[in-house]
Amino acid sequence: MDKDLASIQEARDAVKAASEAWKIWSKASQTEVDRVCAAMAEAGYNASDRLGRLAHEETGYGIAAHKKLKNEFGSKSVWESIRDLKTVGVIRHDPDRRLYEIAWPMGVIAALIPSTNPTSTAFFKILIAVKARNAIVLSPHPSAARCTYEATQVMAQAAERVGAPRGLITCLQQVSLEGTQALMTHRATALILATGGTPMVRAAHSTGKPAFGVGPGNVPVYVDRTADVEKAARYIVASKAFDCSTICATEQAVIADRPIARQLAELMRAEGAYFTSDAETAAIRKVLFHPDGSINTALVGKPASYIAGYTGFHVPERARILVTPLTQIGKSEPLSYEKLTTVLGWYEVDGWEQGCDYSIALIETGGKGHTQIIYAQDERVIMAFGLEKPVFRILVNTMGTLGAIGLTTGVMPSLTLGSGGIGGAITGDNITAYHLINIKRLAYELRSPPLEAMLPGEVPAGPKPEEIERIVRQVVEEILANKPV
Image 1 (tube, rainbow, N blue to C red):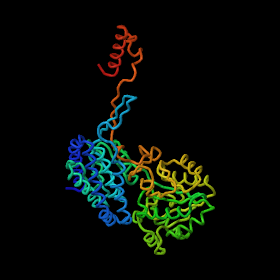
Image 2 (image 1 turned 30 degrees about the horizontal axis):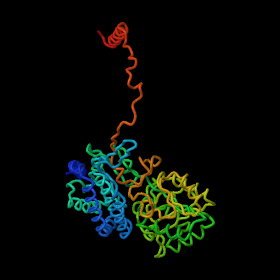
Image 3 (image 1 turned 180 degrees about the vertical axis):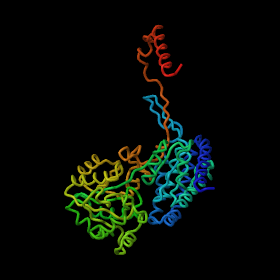
Image 4 (image 1 turned 90 degrees about the horizontal axis):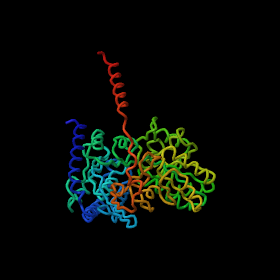
Protein backbone atom coordinates (compact mmCIF):
# COMPACT_ATOMS: atom_id res chain seq x y z
CA MET A 1 0.00 0.00 0.00
CA ASP A 2 1.12 3.58 -0.69
CA LYS A 3 2.79 5.06 2.42
CA ASP A 4 0.36 7.98 2.63
CA LEU A 5 -2.65 5.71 2.26
CA ALA A 6 -1.25 3.35 4.89
CA SER A 7 -0.76 6.31 7.23
CA ILE A 8 -4.31 7.51 6.67
CA GLN A 9 -5.69 4.03 7.33
CA GLU A 10 -3.59 3.67 10.48
CA ALA A 11 -4.92 7.00 11.77
CA ARG A 12 -8.51 5.97 11.10
CA ASP A 13 -8.01 2.63 12.82
CA ALA A 14 -6.32 4.27 15.81
CA VAL A 15 -9.11 6.80 16.31
CA LYS A 16 -11.76 4.10 15.99
CA ALA A 17 -10.02 1.94 18.61
CA ALA A 18 -9.49 4.94 20.85
CA SER A 19 -13.15 5.87 20.58
CA GLU A 20 -14.22 2.40 21.65
CA ALA A 21 -11.78 2.45 24.55
CA TRP A 22 -12.99 5.88 25.57
CA LYS A 23 -16.57 4.64 25.86
CA ILE A 24 -15.30 2.37 28.62
CA TRP A 25 -12.85 4.83 30.17
CA SER A 26 -15.39 7.67 30.29
CA LYS A 27 -17.19 5.66 32.98
CA ALA A 28 -14.09 5.16 35.14
CA SER A 29 -14.14 6.28 38.77
CA GLN A 30 -11.72 8.81 40.18
CA THR A 31 -9.94 5.99 42.02
CA GLU A 32 -9.47 4.04 38.79
CA VAL A 33 -8.27 7.12 36.92
CA ASP A 34 -5.72 8.01 39.58
CA ARG A 35 -4.46 4.43 39.86
CA VAL A 36 -3.78 4.31 36.11
CA CYS A 37 -2.12 7.74 36.03
CA ALA A 38 0.09 6.94 39.01
CA ALA A 39 1.25 3.74 37.32
CA MET A 40 2.01 5.62 34.08
CA ALA A 41 3.93 8.37 35.89
CA GLU A 42 6.08 5.83 37.69
CA ALA A 43 6.76 3.88 34.50
CA GLY A 44 7.65 7.05 32.61
CA TYR A 45 9.94 8.25 35.37
CA ASN A 46 11.75 4.91 35.48
CA ALA A 47 12.25 4.98 31.69
CA SER A 48 13.44 8.60 31.61
CA ASP A 49 17.11 7.86 31.12
CA ARG A 50 16.64 5.25 28.38
CA LEU A 51 14.18 7.39 26.47
CA GLY A 52 16.30 10.50 26.88
CA ARG A 53 19.22 8.72 25.23
CA LEU A 54 16.95 7.33 22.51
CA ALA A 55 15.51 10.77 21.74
CA HIS A 56 18.99 12.26 21.44
CA GLU A 57 20.24 9.43 19.23
CA GLU A 58 17.25 9.56 16.89
CA THR A 59 16.90 13.32 16.47
CA GLY A 60 20.47 14.51 17.01
CA TYR A 61 19.08 17.34 19.14
CA GLY A 62 20.19 18.46 22.55
CA ILE A 63 21.83 16.59 25.41
CA ALA A 64 20.71 13.15 26.58
CA ALA A 65 21.08 13.96 30.30
CA HIS A 66 18.90 17.05 29.88
CA LYS A 67 16.29 15.04 28.00
CA LYS A 68 16.27 12.63 30.93
CA LEU A 69 15.46 15.57 33.24
CA LYS A 70 12.66 16.69 30.92
CA ASN A 71 11.27 13.15 30.89
CA GLU A 72 11.28 13.10 34.68
CA PHE A 73 9.48 16.44 34.65
CA GLY A 74 6.94 15.27 32.05
CA SER A 75 6.11 12.20 34.14
CA LYS A 76 6.68 12.74 37.88
CA SER A 77 6.38 16.54 38.14
CA VAL A 78 3.34 16.73 35.89
CA TRP A 79 1.62 13.91 37.77
CA GLU A 80 2.29 15.56 41.14
CA SER A 81 0.73 18.78 39.84
CA ILE A 82 -2.55 17.09 38.79
CA ARG A 83 -2.72 14.19 41.26
CA ASP A 84 -5.25 15.89 43.54
CA LEU A 85 -7.29 17.42 40.72
CA LYS A 86 -10.87 16.12 40.59
CA THR A 87 -11.84 15.07 37.08
CA VAL A 88 -14.74 12.69 37.74
CA GLY A 89 -18.28 13.43 38.87
CA VAL A 90 -19.05 16.49 41.00
CA ILE A 91 -15.83 18.47 41.15
CA ARG A 92 -17.21 21.63 42.83
CA HIS A 93 -20.31 22.59 44.80
CA ASP A 94 -21.39 26.11 45.69
CA PRO A 95 -24.19 25.77 48.28
CA ASP A 96 -24.95 29.50 48.29
CA ARG A 97 -25.56 29.54 44.54
CA ARG A 98 -27.10 26.03 44.61
CA LEU A 99 -24.74 25.07 41.82
CA TYR A 100 -22.96 21.80 41.13
CA GLU A 101 -20.13 21.50 38.61
CA ILE A 102 -19.73 18.08 37.04
CA ALA A 103 -16.70 16.96 35.01
CA TRP A 104 -17.29 15.52 31.57
CA PRO A 105 -14.48 14.23 29.31
CA MET A 106 -13.82 15.55 25.82
CA GLY A 107 -13.40 12.19 24.06
CA VAL A 108 -10.53 11.31 21.72
CA ILE A 109 -7.59 13.73 21.82
CA ALA A 110 -5.28 14.08 18.81
CA ALA A 111 -1.81 15.00 20.09
CA LEU A 112 0.88 16.39 17.80
CA ILE A 113 4.37 15.83 19.25
CA PRO A 114 7.45 17.92 18.36
CA SER A 115 10.89 16.54 17.53
CA THR A 116 12.59 18.89 20.00
CA ASN A 117 10.92 17.37 23.09
CA PRO A 118 9.47 14.12 21.74
CA THR A 119 9.39 11.80 24.75
CA SER A 120 8.74 14.30 27.54
CA THR A 121 5.86 15.88 25.61
CA ALA A 122 4.41 12.42 24.97
CA PHE A 123 4.49 11.62 28.70
CA PHE A 124 2.91 14.96 29.57
CA LYS A 125 0.07 14.81 27.04
CA ILE A 126 -0.82 11.21 27.84
CA LEU A 127 -1.01 11.94 31.57
CA ILE A 128 -3.22 15.03 31.29
CA ALA A 129 -5.50 13.37 28.72
CA VAL A 130 -6.04 10.16 30.68
CA LYS A 131 -6.43 12.06 33.98
CA ALA A 132 -9.33 13.90 32.34
CA ARG A 133 -10.84 10.51 31.21
CA ASN A 134 -10.00 10.99 27.55
CA ALA A 135 -8.43 8.66 25.01
CA ILE A 136 -5.38 9.93 23.13
CA VAL A 137 -3.73 9.24 19.77
CA LEU A 138 -0.25 10.68 19.27
CA SER A 139 1.19 11.79 15.94
CA PRO A 140 4.97 12.09 16.27
CA HIS A 141 7.32 14.19 14.18
CA PRO A 142 8.83 11.96 11.45
CA SER A 143 12.36 12.54 12.77
CA ALA A 144 11.31 11.38 16.26
CA ALA A 145 8.82 8.63 15.40
CA ARG A 146 10.64 5.78 17.13
CA CYS A 147 11.34 7.45 20.48
CA THR A 148 7.82 8.92 20.66
CA TYR A 149 6.36 5.49 19.97
CA GLU A 150 8.56 3.93 22.66
CA ALA A 151 7.47 6.58 25.18
CA THR A 152 3.83 5.91 24.30
CA GLN A 153 4.30 2.18 24.75
CA VAL A 154 5.79 2.70 28.22
CA MET A 155 2.69 4.60 29.29
CA ALA A 156 0.14 2.41 27.49
CA GLN A 157 1.51 -0.83 28.87
CA ALA A 158 1.64 0.56 32.41
CA ALA A 159 -1.95 1.78 32.06
CA GLU A 160 -3.26 -1.52 30.74
CA ARG A 161 -1.54 -3.49 33.51
CA VAL A 162 -3.69 -1.71 36.10
CA GLY A 163 -6.99 -1.75 34.25
CA ALA A 164 -7.08 0.80 31.40
CA PRO A 165 -8.76 -0.50 28.23
CA ARG A 166 -6.57 -1.43 25.28
CA GLY A 167 -6.48 1.26 22.60
CA LEU A 168 -6.90 4.16 25.04
CA ILE A 169 -3.33 5.34 24.37
CA THR A 170 -1.93 4.98 20.85
CA CYS A 171 0.89 6.39 18.73
CA LEU A 172 0.97 6.40 14.94
CA GLN A 173 3.95 4.56 13.43
CA GLN A 174 3.45 5.29 9.73
CA VAL A 175 3.85 9.04 9.93
CA SER A 176 2.87 11.38 7.11
CA LEU A 177 1.17 14.74 6.72
CA GLU A 178 -1.83 12.99 5.22
CA GLY A 179 -2.07 10.61 8.16
CA THR A 180 -1.82 13.43 10.68
CA GLN A 181 -4.49 15.35 8.79
CA ALA A 182 -6.74 12.27 8.85
CA LEU A 183 -6.19 12.00 12.60
CA MET A 184 -7.05 15.64 13.25
CA THR A 185 -10.13 15.73 11.03
CA HIS A 186 -11.63 12.35 11.94
CA ARG A 187 -15.26 12.68 13.05
CA ALA A 188 -14.46 10.92 16.35
CA THR A 189 -11.60 13.31 17.21
CA ALA A 190 -12.86 15.73 19.82
CA LEU A 191 -9.90 18.05 20.36
CA ILE A 192 -6.34 18.67 19.13
CA LEU A 193 -3.30 19.31 21.33
CA ALA A 194 -0.71 20.85 19.00
CA THR A 195 2.85 21.42 20.20
CA GLY A 196 5.48 22.19 17.58
CA GLY A 197 6.31 24.59 14.80
CA THR A 198 4.03 27.31 13.49
CA PRO A 199 2.92 25.35 10.36
CA MET A 200 1.83 22.42 12.53
CA VAL A 201 -0.13 24.63 14.90
CA ARG A 202 -1.78 26.47 12.01
CA ALA A 203 -2.79 23.15 10.46
CA ALA A 204 -4.41 22.14 13.75
CA HIS A 205 -6.38 25.38 13.98
CA SER A 206 -7.52 25.07 10.36
CA THR A 207 -9.29 21.73 10.81
CA GLY A 208 -12.42 23.20 12.35
CA LYS A 209 -11.84 21.14 15.51
CA PRO A 210 -11.25 22.69 18.93
CA ALA A 211 -7.48 23.02 19.35
CA PHE A 212 -4.97 24.05 21.99
CA GLY A 213 -1.90 25.35 20.21
CA VAL A 214 1.27 27.20 21.07
CA GLY A 215 3.08 30.15 19.55
CA PRO A 216 6.78 30.75 18.93
CA GLY A 217 8.76 32.00 21.88
CA ASN A 218 11.19 34.81 21.11
CA VAL A 219 11.98 35.30 24.78
CA PRO A 220 13.81 38.46 25.88
CA VAL A 221 15.64 38.58 29.21
CA TYR A 222 16.17 42.03 30.70
CA VAL A 223 18.89 42.38 33.35
CA ASP A 224 18.37 45.53 35.40
CA ARG A 225 21.04 47.55 37.23
CA THR A 226 19.46 46.34 40.51
CA ALA A 227 19.81 42.66 39.59
CA ASP A 228 21.90 40.00 41.27
CA VAL A 229 24.22 40.02 38.28
CA GLU A 230 26.18 36.91 39.27
CA LYS A 231 22.98 34.87 39.53
CA ALA A 232 21.67 36.29 36.26
CA ALA A 233 24.87 35.33 34.42
CA ARG A 234 24.89 31.80 35.86
CA TYR A 235 21.22 31.19 35.11
CA ILE A 236 21.14 32.72 31.62
CA VAL A 237 24.06 30.65 30.34
CA ALA A 238 22.83 27.43 31.94
CA SER A 239 19.28 27.95 30.67
CA LYS A 240 20.33 28.77 27.11
CA ALA A 241 22.66 25.77 27.07
CA PHE A 242 20.05 23.43 28.58
CA ASP A 243 19.31 20.71 26.03
CA CYS A 244 20.86 23.07 23.45
CA SER A 245 17.93 25.49 23.62
CA THR A 246 15.17 23.18 22.39
CA ILE A 247 12.44 24.45 24.74
CA CYS A 248 10.40 27.33 23.31
CA ALA A 249 10.73 29.37 26.50
CA THR A 250 14.52 29.48 26.30
CA GLU A 251 16.19 32.90 26.39
CA GLN A 252 16.66 34.36 22.91
CA ALA A 253 18.21 37.77 23.64
CA VAL A 254 19.80 39.44 26.66
CA ILE A 255 18.94 43.11 27.19
CA ALA A 256 21.60 44.41 29.58
CA ASP A 257 21.21 47.64 31.50
CA ARG A 258 24.37 49.61 30.63
CA PRO A 259 25.68 50.14 34.21
CA ILE A 260 25.98 46.37 34.71
CA ALA A 261 26.48 45.26 31.07
CA ARG A 262 30.28 44.82 31.21
CA GLN A 263 30.10 42.94 34.52
CA LEU A 264 27.31 40.71 33.21
CA ALA A 265 29.28 39.91 30.06
CA GLU A 266 32.42 38.98 32.03
CA LEU A 267 30.45 36.78 34.41
CA MET A 268 28.72 35.09 31.49
CA ARG A 269 32.11 34.42 29.89
CA ALA A 270 33.18 32.75 33.11
CA GLU A 271 30.09 30.49 32.82
CA GLY A 272 30.96 29.45 29.26
CA ALA A 273 29.51 32.18 27.03
CA TYR A 274 31.56 32.99 23.94
CA PHE A 275 30.95 36.51 22.64
CA THR A 276 31.35 36.56 18.86
CA SER A 277 33.24 39.15 16.84
CA ASP A 278 31.52 41.20 14.15
CA ALA A 279 32.83 38.83 11.48
CA GLU A 280 31.72 35.74 13.39
CA THR A 281 28.30 37.27 14.02
CA ALA A 282 27.92 37.99 10.30
CA ALA A 283 28.91 34.43 9.47
CA ILE A 284 26.34 32.99 11.91
CA ARG A 285 23.70 35.31 10.49
CA LYS A 286 24.27 33.84 7.03
CA VAL A 287 24.08 30.15 7.98
CA LEU A 288 21.51 30.07 10.80
CA PHE A 289 18.54 31.18 8.70
CA HIS A 290 17.42 30.47 5.13
CA PRO A 291 16.57 33.38 2.79
CA ASP A 292 12.85 32.86 3.51
CA GLY A 293 13.49 33.43 7.23
CA SER A 294 13.12 29.79 8.33
CA ILE A 295 15.79 28.35 10.60
CA ASN A 296 18.42 25.98 9.23
CA THR A 297 17.31 22.71 10.85
CA ALA A 298 20.87 21.35 10.59
CA LEU A 299 21.73 23.75 13.43
CA VAL A 300 18.67 23.27 15.67
CA GLY A 301 19.54 21.89 19.11
CA LYS A 302 23.29 21.81 18.51
CA PRO A 303 26.18 22.67 20.89
CA ALA A 304 28.09 25.94 20.50
CA SER A 305 31.19 24.17 19.18
CA TYR A 306 29.15 22.46 16.45
CA ILE A 307 27.61 25.74 15.30
CA ALA A 308 30.99 27.48 15.30
CA GLY A 309 32.58 24.68 13.29
CA TYR A 310 29.67 24.61 10.84
CA THR A 311 30.00 28.37 10.43
CA GLY A 312 33.79 28.32 9.94
CA PHE A 313 35.42 29.41 13.19
CA HIS A 314 36.60 27.80 16.41
CA VAL A 315 35.63 28.36 20.03
CA PRO A 316 37.22 27.19 23.28
CA GLU A 317 36.24 23.69 24.36
CA ARG A 318 34.43 25.07 27.41
CA ALA A 319 32.14 27.31 25.32
CA ARG A 320 28.49 26.48 26.06
CA ILE A 321 26.68 29.19 24.10
CA LEU A 322 27.46 31.79 21.43
CA VAL A 323 26.48 35.38 22.27
CA THR A 324 26.05 37.70 19.27
CA PRO A 325 26.15 41.47 20.00
CA LEU A 326 23.33 43.16 18.05
CA THR A 327 21.86 46.63 17.56
CA GLN A 328 18.83 46.08 15.30
CA ILE A 329 15.51 44.27 15.89
CA GLY A 330 13.15 42.99 13.21
CA LYS A 331 13.49 42.11 9.53
CA SER A 332 16.83 43.86 9.21
CA GLU A 333 18.34 41.53 11.83
CA PRO A 334 17.62 37.79 11.43
CA LEU A 335 19.35 37.04 14.73
CA SER A 336 16.65 38.99 16.57
CA TYR A 337 14.22 36.13 15.84
CA GLU A 338 13.71 32.85 17.73
CA LYS A 339 16.80 30.64 17.63
CA LEU A 340 16.18 27.05 18.79
CA THR A 341 19.87 26.48 19.30
CA THR A 342 22.77 27.77 21.40
CA VAL A 343 22.92 31.28 19.85
CA LEU A 344 21.89 34.19 22.08
CA GLY A 345 21.43 37.82 21.06
CA TRP A 346 22.94 40.67 23.13
CA TYR A 347 21.67 44.25 23.42
CA GLU A 348 22.65 47.11 25.75
CA VAL A 349 20.21 49.79 26.93
CA ASP A 350 20.09 52.84 29.19
CA GLY A 351 17.61 52.12 31.95
CA TRP A 352 14.59 49.90 32.42
CA GLU A 353 12.31 52.05 30.25
CA GLN A 354 14.50 51.43 27.21
CA GLY A 355 14.82 47.80 28.30
CA CYS A 356 11.04 47.65 28.26
CA ASP A 357 10.94 49.07 24.72
CA TYR A 358 13.54 46.58 23.46
CA SER A 359 11.69 43.72 25.11
CA ILE A 360 8.41 44.64 23.43
CA ALA A 361 10.14 45.02 20.07
CA LEU A 362 11.60 41.51 20.37
CA ILE A 363 8.26 40.08 21.46
CA GLU A 364 6.53 41.76 18.52
CA THR A 365 9.18 40.30 16.22
CA GLY A 366 8.16 36.75 16.98
CA GLY A 367 7.07 35.92 20.49
CA LYS A 368 3.68 37.53 21.05
CA GLY A 369 1.95 36.15 24.11
CA HIS A 370 4.75 33.83 25.16
CA THR A 371 7.35 34.70 27.80
CA GLN A 372 9.48 37.55 29.21
CA ILE A 373 12.25 37.22 31.81
CA ILE A 374 13.50 39.93 34.14
CA TYR A 375 16.35 39.98 36.64
CA ALA A 376 15.92 42.84 39.13
CA GLN A 377 15.49 43.62 42.81
CA ASP A 378 13.44 46.79 42.29
CA GLU A 379 9.82 45.67 42.69
CA ARG A 380 8.61 48.78 40.87
CA VAL A 381 10.55 47.78 37.76
CA ILE A 382 9.45 44.17 38.06
CA MET A 383 5.78 45.12 38.27
CA ALA A 384 6.13 47.52 35.34
CA PHE A 385 7.34 44.61 33.22
CA GLY A 386 4.52 42.42 34.50
CA LEU A 387 1.88 45.00 33.66
CA GLU A 388 3.15 46.13 30.28
CA LYS A 389 4.53 43.13 28.42
CA PRO A 390 2.24 41.43 25.86
CA VAL A 391 3.09 37.95 27.15
CA PHE A 392 1.44 35.53 29.59
CA ARG A 393 4.51 34.36 31.52
CA ILE A 394 6.73 36.97 33.15
CA LEU A 395 9.51 35.16 34.98
CA VAL A 396 11.41 36.94 37.74
CA ASN A 397 15.00 36.02 38.68
CA THR A 398 14.78 32.50 37.29
CA MET A 399 15.67 30.45 34.21
CA GLY A 400 13.44 30.80 31.19
CA THR A 401 13.75 27.17 30.15
CA LEU A 402 12.76 25.65 33.48
CA GLY A 403 10.74 28.54 34.87
CA ALA A 404 8.15 28.79 32.12
CA ILE A 405 7.36 25.07 32.20
CA GLY A 406 6.86 25.21 35.98
CA LEU A 407 9.91 23.37 37.30
CA THR A 408 11.40 26.37 39.15
CA THR A 409 8.27 28.56 39.49
CA GLY A 410 4.69 28.26 40.67
CA VAL A 411 3.11 28.19 37.21
CA MET A 412 1.38 24.96 36.22
CA PRO A 413 3.85 22.27 35.11
CA SER A 414 3.32 21.87 31.39
CA LEU A 415 5.07 21.26 28.08
CA THR A 416 2.42 23.09 26.05
CA LEU A 417 2.57 26.82 26.74
CA GLY A 418 -0.34 28.85 25.41
CA SER A 419 0.33 32.25 23.86
CA GLY A 420 -3.19 33.67 24.15
CA GLY A 421 -5.23 35.51 21.56
CA ILE A 422 -2.39 37.87 20.63
CA GLY A 423 -0.22 34.85 19.89
CA GLY A 424 -2.85 32.98 17.89
CA ALA A 425 -3.88 30.57 20.66
CA ILE A 426 -7.14 30.09 22.56
CA THR A 427 -5.47 30.57 25.97
CA GLY A 428 -2.33 31.97 27.54
CA ASP A 429 -2.31 29.22 30.18
CA ASN A 430 0.15 26.43 30.68
CA ILE A 431 -2.07 23.64 29.36
CA THR A 432 -2.94 20.85 31.81
CA ALA A 433 -5.64 18.33 32.66
CA TYR A 434 -8.39 20.79 33.57
CA HIS A 435 -8.25 22.21 30.03
CA LEU A 436 -9.27 18.76 28.76
CA ILE A 437 -12.59 18.43 30.57
CA ASN A 438 -15.93 20.05 29.90
CA ILE A 439 -17.96 21.26 32.88
CA LYS A 440 -21.66 20.47 33.24
CA ARG A 441 -23.54 22.74 35.62
CA LEU A 442 -26.48 21.53 37.67
CA ALA A 443 -28.30 24.71 38.74
CA TYR A 444 -31.29 25.02 41.10
CA GLU A 445 -33.65 27.98 41.14
CA LEU A 446 -32.47 30.78 43.41
CA ARG A 447 -35.21 33.35 42.79
CA SER A 448 -38.68 33.40 41.25
CA PRO A 449 -38.96 34.69 37.68
CA PRO A 450 -40.22 38.28 37.15
CA LEU A 451 -44.02 38.61 37.04
CA GLU A 452 -43.83 39.92 33.46
CA ALA A 453 -42.32 36.64 32.33
CA MET A 454 -45.37 34.76 33.61
CA LEU A 455 -48.03 36.88 31.85
CA PRO A 456 -49.21 35.94 28.35
CA GLY A 457 -48.75 39.47 26.97
CA GLU A 458 -50.30 40.82 23.78
CA VAL A 459 -50.26 38.37 20.87
CA PRO A 460 -49.53 40.19 17.57
CA ALA A 461 -52.30 39.89 14.99
CA GLY A 462 -51.60 38.00 11.75
CA PRO A 463 -51.91 39.54 8.25
CA LYS A 464 -55.38 40.42 6.98
CA PRO A 465 -56.96 38.29 4.18
CA GLU A 466 -56.61 41.06 1.58
CA GLU A 467 -52.89 41.39 2.43
CA ILE A 468 -52.37 37.65 1.95
CA GLU A 469 -54.17 37.82 -1.42
CA ARG A 470 -51.94 40.72 -2.54
CA ILE A 471 -48.75 38.86 -1.63
CA VAL A 472 -49.84 35.69 -3.45
CA ARG A 473 -50.76 37.70 -6.58
CA GLN A 474 -47.36 39.41 -6.56
CA VAL A 475 -45.50 36.12 -6.27
CA VAL A 476 -47.48 34.60 -9.15
CA GLU A 477 -46.80 37.63 -11.38
CA GLU A 478 -43.04 37.39 -10.66
CA ILE A 479 -43.02 33.69 -11.54
CA LEU A 480 -44.90 34.25 -14.83
CA ALA A 481 -42.61 37.16 -15.72
CA ASN A 482 -39.55 34.91 -15.60
CA LYS A 483 -41.02 31.89 -17.41
CA PRO A 484 -42.42 31.74 -20.96
CA VAL A 485 -46.04 30.62 -21.08
